[in-house]
Image (cartoon, rainbow, N blue to C red; front, side, top):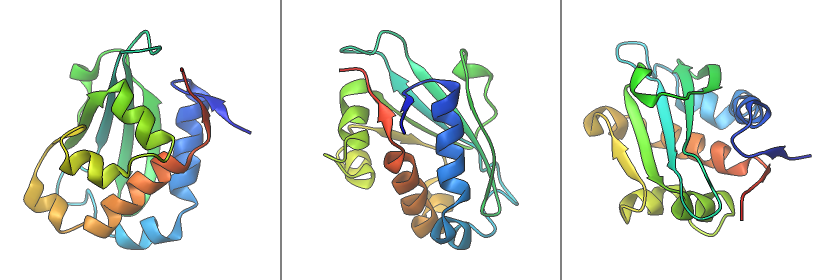
Length: 140
């Protein structure tokens, strides 16, 4: 069963998917212990997406402590942010574009400490896979 993209049910499904992923849990040991490991996914409005969507993931040591939607992304205390337009995110969520490739092609922008992230590449890959694996009813 899929949740409506951008709903609290969708955010909860993303958290549950991350929590249930052993590969993420193992690869993310130590994540956020000596730095801010929170990540904000910012999906800019466009196409059929009328309003931007901001999903905050509170991540620490292989655990997803919370996933919630934010109205004001500037209020979020995050170490990393992934930001991009709806068409790019839609391609990622539909499986048409791999998340790492979307970042490499700069369709989705990464903000945060690249040296820190490079220490956790397998964790980042597993996290992005979990995010894109969640079934959701997407705006056209």
